[in-house]
Every structure is written in C-alpha cells, then in structure tokens.
Image (cartoon, rainbow over all chains, first blue to last red; front, top):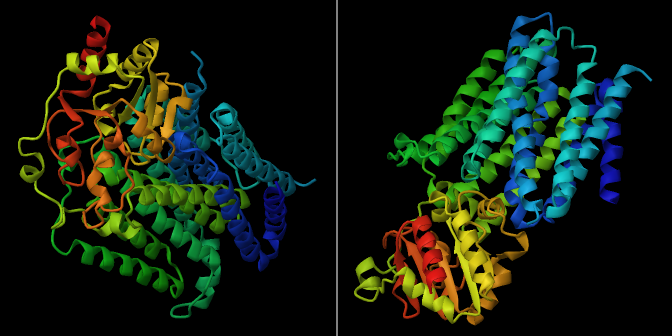
Length: 114
Length: 471
C-alpha cells in the first residue's frame, strides 16, 4: 500500500506543477517511473490462469487515451483537430467498452460455480 | 475549488481505481470486482474530461462515443472464446491508433509549436512535449499496423498463412528504424514539424507491418504481449504530450503488464525476445529427422483401448494445446474429465505457459467449459506428479511436451516442457505425425509408453466419452 500512496502524491505534484511550465516534465517523469514500479509489483502477483483477462483488461485501461481524444474532439475552433480527435474517440471507445465488457465476460466464467 | 483542481482530483481517483482494479485481478474471486473498479475509474476520468473548459462542442464527441461504443460492445458480446487472441490483438491496435491520432491532433494546433516556430530552421528545440508526440506517433503506428497484421494471422486469412519472407528483410527493418530516428531528430530543428510527424507515422506503419510479418504460430503469444505493452507505452507518451497524469499512470501500468507477460512467454520457450522477433526457429544438426525418430515405432490406438486404460487408472492428467482450441473441443474435454471423476479417477489439467496463442489462452477456454480453476495446474506445480499419473491425454499440443527440449543442442533445447513422458501411459490425440511449430519430430510419439490416437481433437474426445461409458 505504501507504493500506492507514493504515486498518489506524485500524481498530485504532477498536476499541480502543470501550469508552471518547467516542472511538469520532471513531475511527469516521477509519476511515470513510480507507476511502472507499482505495475511490476501488482502484475507479477497475477496468476497465469488470469493472464488472458489481464491482457484484455489492461488493454481497456490503455484506452485511457480517450481522455486526450475527448479534449481534441471537443475542440470547436479547428476542424483538423476535431476530426483527428473524433477518429481517436472512436478507436479508444472501442478499446474501452469492448475491453471491459469482454474481460467481464471472461472473468464471470472463472467465478461461476457449478 | 476551481475546475482544474476538480478535474485533477478526478484523474487521481481514476488512477487509484485502475491500480485497485489490477490488484483485484490477483485472484479469480476478486477479479470481476477488480475489472468493475477499472471500468469505474475510466468513467470517472471521462466524465471529468467532459467538464474541461477546452471542450466546447459535444457533437463529435457523442458521435465518436456512440460509434466506438457500439462496435466495442458488439465485438465483446459476439466474440467466441477461441477467438480471444485476435480480439485482444485488434484492441491493442486500436489503442495504438488512438494514441497516434491524439498526438497528431495536438500537433495540428499551432500553439503547440510556437517555441519551435520562434526558433526557426536549424536550431534544435528539445521540447519534451514534441518528443513525446513523436514517440506516441512512432509507437502507436507500429502497434496499430503490427496488431492488425497479428489479427489477420490469428484469423488465419489465407493470404497471411505463410509469412512473406524475402532476402534483406532484416536490413529493411533496420533502415526503417534508423529513418524513424532521423525524422525524430530532424523534427527538433524544424519550425513546423507537422509534416514530419505524419511522415514518421507512415514510416512507422511500414515498420510495424514488417516487424510482425515474419512471426507466426507459437511465437504469437510473445508478439501479442509485446504489442499489449506498446499500446500502454503509446498512451503513456500521449500523457507526456498533454502533461496528463492519469494517461501516464494508466499507460505505464499497461506497459509494465505487457513487458512482464512478454518476459514470461520468452522464458517459457527459453528464447530471448530478440530471437523470437528476429531469429529463425529451425531444426539443428542434432535434431533427428522424422524417419529416424518414428521409423516403425509409433503405435496407433483406438477409443476402446484408451477407455480400458482409464478403467484401471487412479490418476489422469489432460494436457490441452492449441489443437484443442482449433477443434473447439473444450466442452467435450470437460465432459470427459467429469465422466472420469465420476468413476473415482483424480483428474487434473496441465497448462504450459505458451500453450495456445496468447498467455492464459487454455485457462480461458477451460473456464468457458466450466472446469474449476483449481484443477488447472501450472507446469512447475504438476511436473513432479507425472510419475504418479496413470494416463496422460495430450490434446493438440506438441512442442511443449517434446522431450528433445532436454537436449541443449536441439532447436528447442532448454525450453521447459511438461514431463508427460514420465507418466505410465501417454495418449496423444493428433491428426497426423506432422511436426509442431518448431518443425522438429517428437520422440515422445515413438516412446514405449506412448499411444497415438489419430483423429480430430473434438471427435477423439467424444469417441472416448462414448467408449468409457460403454466399458
């Protein structure tokens, strides 16, 4: 749990620094490195029997690009930005919706009792 | 609280939910809840983004969400469990593609390259956001096209059945890789690098295609795991472009996950990642030819004979491989396991880490057939027990049970295998004596304690069930 609280702290630092132009890169790097460590800690504990749901579930999480896609698609002033953004929204939403749904479908099968 | 703070806090909540969600995946009992936590995190992040002041128009957002949501939902509900590897490959690709478009959109805005425009031609500007955008474009495009090709290969479209190999392919990959780096360096000195960005995306697309092109068959798990990692890293790079913490955190979690899986898959084949990606798996001089190995020593068997073996058995192990997935035999296999258990036989399933076409492929299929996960044993856990096993039934697996792997000079030398040959009797369900992915004959098939049951996986198991019931 200590690892998690570290990242929370770093994430907050990253966001707070976002407006100060110089710090964000360093803060972002901090968040990045700590998140990698958290990832290694947790994922090495996931049993092989769940590796396929892990892939599809983590895949859905990587659909977080949707956040960036929404910002671009909602950008009213420049059509170029908005169109690229919309394409990104479509791809990322397939990833998010499909990923979480199919993972749920698989995991229900593991939980099912006879 | 101002809006920026609210959004930032929401992203923080989302990041925590992702971490807790992955934590839930450490046990099958908590996994469903974990996945829901992850989905909740995504919902929080999306809702927070929608109140962002930069979001002016909602029309295109709604269009995108509806189209994407429909496609995703249909794919997720309709897909057969045996087709899971290609679905994951496809989703990997979409993740990568989304990152390319987001990075591209960000660089279409003139304010993104104000600094570079001011610096003019030839003065290198080390703008972190720009470097990140180019990395997102590079990794994302490789992921998208690589995954698309992996999808085509896994779906076994005729055109992609045989890898398209030509001389100088590795050299071409190196040239393309270097070209990407040159474009990246050139962009640093260019006042309006948007054109360079899209050129890089095109080159990276070709590179992604050619990187996956020579890889096939049993090496697919490694490729899918690696592309999984890339899709995370692309999201992460996009996070650096937008200075967005939740993208960076989620992206690195996925990146780490994919790398760990890649590593596990490589270890399970005793090959380095470089060897899987660029090497060629071919029989070595110490690998005997099929005639030398099999010559008159292979014994064919029938369902009735195997049923008699089960009559006197106390412990039986079933070893599923890709062949079980192809034959869609998982439900029949479960029925056989149940039947044997009802006769007082102890039944377990031995899962090799690279059995199938993606990590955990066999486990999902057997879970679909409602085999309790406690009965699925990992290689290291079950190997010591083969000596006390009366009947091992191998269905559609080959290289992972090939004792030649114990000879370090063989093509698959050093690969950890399931020690099925230690059992009293091994029954191998297989259509013919054709070699597995490694292309080398399997001396197990000619061993004294081995019987070959030549048939399609599903038909063989159904016949076995009938024979056991009669006997």
